[in-house]
Length: 143
Ligand SMILES: [Zn+2]
Image (cartoon, rainbow, N blue to C red; front, side, top):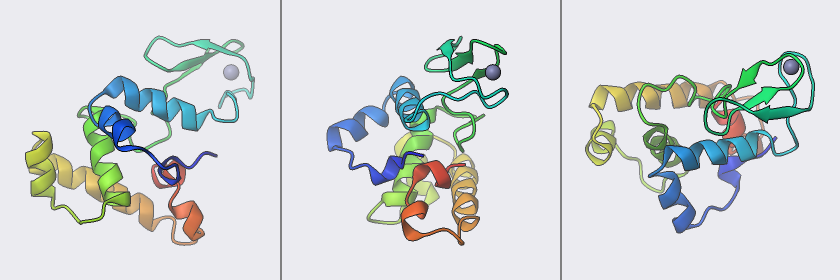
């Protein structure tokens, strides 16, 4: 499994990710299927393009998986690039930003930021038994 936040991202890559849902989905799909696609339903390795951006559809059982499925970005009620910004800052940020600050920077409601940050913290807490390296892996953090 790929470790998204273990990868050193340049300022340029980050600013792209923080501005574009498409970029976030592209990035998630790259990390998620780094070692190739495997259908979660039937284990088939062949896929074709799904209906939404960067989703993949199994050629055998036709089940479709989005790039965000299985991560905390799944079913996110606000733009994924904003969620990405919060997740990145919570996991890798040098300073701890308040949910008010997130709300101000992202034009979201404070409660929305608070709820999402709680979700991230819960995911992190669930991984207490994991190694430091694994904890840094967004793949695990965001499951
Ligand atoms: Zn399948």
